[in-house]
Structure formats: structure tokens, C-alpha cells
Length: 208
Picture (cartoon, rainbow, N blue to C red):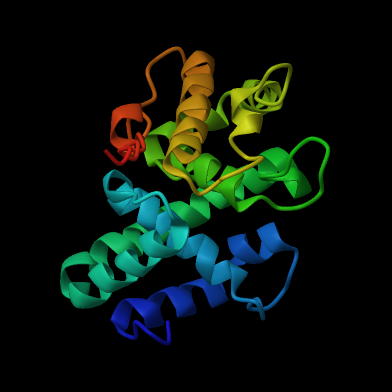
């Protein structure tokens, strides 16, 4: 916020400070002194609007998001106001569904932002939200199953959580789980994932 001041920076600060949903998630009753509330909301906006630009590192992603919104505030203001209301509705449902266990591993009481990114991406979509409310028990069971056995979802929150492959995997795994619950396709965001060819290290040539 200090390096990228602007209308969006002011907006996300104020919206986070007033968010009852964020206070419920973090177990606080005032704006978070460590600004976790602002980061969580900013991450939501970033994935909602720019998932196809995800660069594989969260700091860069958020910097680019702040820069874009600040420079083009007039273009995005209305969309961000709507997205904020949808965020609050999604958080309210997640809190109702999981209570204090939102975005926590079954064996941990610590709030996990990487898990929350995946949960709120879908629960903030109005049409999906209405369907998911009607199948709460199945949604909760589907979430618990994400961590059973040889879980690719669990692996994707253990290391390099901001890397594009694991970020994409979390969103795809949860979309697949929700698709099973709802009986129809749930589309994950298109996060660019480097291919093995793109990330291959070029071997050094031996001196002749």
C-alpha cells in the first residue's frame, strides 16, 4: 500500500477493516494489526479478476493487482464493489458451514490462506453459492475427503504453496470435488502452469 498508493489501495484497506466476515475468519473484533485481513481480501480480488495472469509468486501477483486496479480505478470500481458483497456472502456461508474450522487442515487450528483462496473462489460465485447451500453436508464431507489418503490437495498446501503448479492444483482439486457434489462441471480458473519444457534447465556445454 505504501509503494502503490491509490484509490484501490484505499478501498481494500477500508473494505477489509469493515468486513465482519474477515473478523470472523481471523477471530478478531477490529481491523487486524498485522494487516492479514487486507491481504486475504486482496488475494481474493486478484484471483477473481486476474487468475490467468498468475506469475507463480504471490507478492508479484498482488503488486501487479494493486497497480492495475489503482491505475484503472474507474473501470473496476463497480465490479469491485459487487465482488466485495459476493465475498462477504461466501465467507458468511463458509463460517456457517465450518464454524471455526474454515480453511484449516483437519489436524490444525491455524487459518490457511492457501486453502481459503480455493474455498472462497467458488463460494463467492452467486449461482454456485445457492446450490452449495442446499448440499452443505455433502460439501463438508467433500472437504474432509480432500485430506484423506494420498492426497494431492494436501501435498499442494505443504510446500511451495505460492508456486503456480500447487496453486492450480488446489483450485482444480476443489472444483472437481464440488462438481461431484453438484453433479455438473465446476470450472477452475485458468492459472498458467509452466510446462516441463519451459522450466527445463539448459545443460552447460563442456569446454572443447
